[in-house]
Image 1 (cartoon, one colour):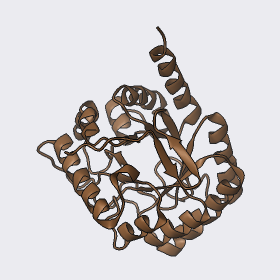
Image 2 (tube, rainbow, N blue to C red; image 1 turned 90 degrees about the horizontal axis):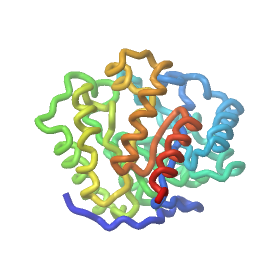
Image 3 (cartoon, rainbow, N blue to C red; image 1 turned 45 degrees about the vertical axis):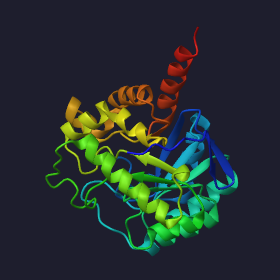
Image 4 (cartoon, rainbow, N blue to C red; image 1 turned 135 degrees about the vertical axis):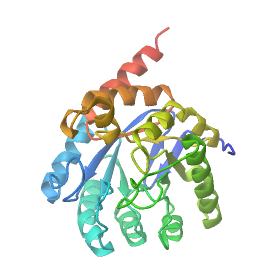
Length: 283
């Protein structure tokens, strides 16, 4: 791994993300089939009310997704995805003081949502779809690269690693290189280890335990474990009962240097962030 000096200010469209601070990214799925909240926010007014509530609770980023990436999820067409996300991106950009992240792998969606006011591209496929690298580069926006093997439809079909942390690092190093070749400098990249994507419970736990190794890249880490199956499997809890396990992982992620926490439960996670900050600032 090669290290890149991390700037503390990351331009995100017409806003700036201060990476000297920890940020909570609120999840806004405008899909009918996401694993936790599918269908709840597929109507524009409901989505906007939820975005407003998350910003009021302390979210500094809102991650808008129009294609479910849960295990076994179906692929949607670019037009269908764009019809889901464009109206809410445009409205949030117009009405709320928050950085909009768009959870997409689709070049056309990247281009159009950037035009509408998005400030970050969050791609679970790490810009591996045809045309995605060029589209992301053309927007001038920062990108979040996530580790995943295969596709959401088959990623949990017996994933195997010799050393999950090393192999995740090798994957991210290769994607950083491809971004550089496409004109996306490392200074515009955020990294996501991809918890829950093509990983067993033991893979997820080991990767989380050794997450500090990924700081060798010198890029900010985004961690998304909210309500995921790794919590359910470790604690034997259904989706609706994973809050406390998620908050425990949020606290651990902050101790391991994560800069962005991608979550469903914004207010509770913001309390975790503030409490840790209070302790760390004490004499």
